[in-house]
Amino acid sequence: MQQNTGIHRAIQPVAKARTEVDEHNLVDKTEAPADPQLRRTGRRPQRDQSQRFYVSVQAKFALAFMVSLVWTVVSTLLALPWLHDLAAVVSWPVAIFAVGGIAVLPGMMNAFLVTGLLLDRRPPRKPLLDYPAISILVAAYNEESSIADTLRSIAQQEYPGEFEVLVIDDGSKDATAAIVEANPYPWARLLRQPRNMGKAAALNRGLAESKHDYVITLDADSFLFGDALARLVERYFSDPSSTRAVAGTMLVRNSRKNWVTRAQEWDYFHGIAAIKRVQSLFQGTMVAQGAFSIYDREALVEIGGWQDCVGEDIVLTWAMLVRGWRVGHAEDACCFTNVPDNLRQFVKQRQRWSRGMMEAFRQHPRILLAPRMSTLFVWWNVLFPWLDLAYTLCFIPGVILAGFGVYWVAGPMTLVLLPMALLMNYVMYRIGVGMFASQNLRVRRNVLGFLVYAFTYSLILQPASVVGYLSELFGTRKTWGSK
Image (cartoon, rainbow, N blue to C red; front, top):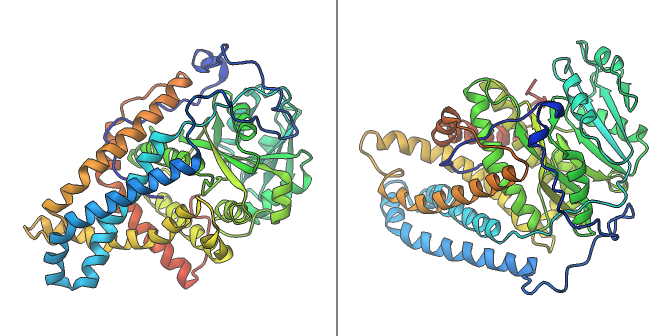
C-alpha cells in the first residue's frame, strides 16, 4: 500500500546483540500477573466488564467510515471548480479519473486511517502461563552474508517455550548451507532443497517437517529485536479467538547504506506499520508477511500451505480472510530486515508486491463479497490501480506542466490536500514513536531519507506498481526480482 509523504524524522535502526542493548530491551516488571485464560489451548481472555466506557470495534468502524464519507463529500465539493476547469480541457471522464485518483480517493482513505488510528485502543498483550512450542521456518537462498546473524538473533530471544528452527536452503550457490551446518545451536536444523525451487516450496518443505502447532516464518536476512518472539506469541493469544495469523512489525536494518534504503526506513516505520495496525483493529490485516509472522499450523494445512507465486504471503493471507478468519498485527514485535539497496531491486520488489495483489484477487475473488469489516480494505486494493495510474499518467505530467505555468492538474487546488496529509502523517508518527518508546528505542535524524520519501518516493513507487499490474495482466515471466 502506498503512503503519503511524512513530515518528521525516520528511525534509529537497532540490530545489535542482546549483550549490547540490554538497557534498551524493555521488560515491564509492573505488568499484571499472567492471566490463567492464556494457555496453550488458545483460549483468549474475556473483555473486562468493569471497564466504564467500551466502544465496540463495529462502532469504531462505523465512526471511521462516516468521517471518511464526510471528508469525501466535502473534498468533492471543493474540487468541483477544479473538475470543471480540467474537463474543459481533457473531457469529463478524464477529469474525474484524474481528480478522483490523485485527490478524492486518497483523501477518503486517509480520513479513515487517521480516525482508525485515533480510535485504536486494543487490549494489551499479557504474559502466558504456558508458552506454546513453536517451529520457525527460515527459507534461505544465497544468504551467506546474513544467515549467521539471523540465527544469532533467534538465540538471543530467550523464548520461554520450546522451539525449533528449520533453515531450508533453496539451492544456494554460496556458503549458506555450510554456515548453517556449522552453527552451534542444537535447535537449528538444515534442510536442503535439491535445486532452487522457490520460496513457497521451501516453506512447504519446512512445514511438512516441522513438529509444533504454531509456525513462525522468518526471512534469512532478518534480525529479531528484543523479545520479538514472545511478543508475537503473546499478541496472538491476546487477540480474538478467530485469529489464525499475526504479522510482526518489519523495520529497516540496512537504512544507513544509501538514499534508497534511507527512504525505505521511513516507509516501513511511518506507513506500513500504521496501516497494518488499523487493518488489524478492523479484523483483517491484508498481509501477514512471510518475513516475520506467526500462523496456526492447522490453518496452514487446511489452506494447502504456500502457493507457488510471487506474492505467496499475500495469497496465503487472503486464503485465511476468505474463510472468515482474522489476521492480526503485533505492533511491538519488531524485526529488522535488509531492504533492497539499489533502485533496480527496489522497483522489482514493488512490482512483485503489485503482482502478488493481483494473484490474490485471481485466486480468491469471493473475498470481495465477504460480509466483514476488512472487506473495505480489499476494495481499497481494487482501487489502487486507479490511484497508481492517475498518479503516473496525470499527476506527474501535471507537476511538469505546472513548472511551465500550466495548472490543469497540479496547482492551487491541490493545496486542499495538505491539511489531511499533515494530520495523517502526524498521527502515524506519534503512534510509531510511542511504540518505540515502549521498547526504549529512539527516533534518529534521517534528513536525506525524509526528503526522498516526501518528494521522490511516489515518483518511483507508483509507476513501478503500474508496471507490476501490467506484467501480471499480460502474463510476463515471474521472478523474485530482489536478489
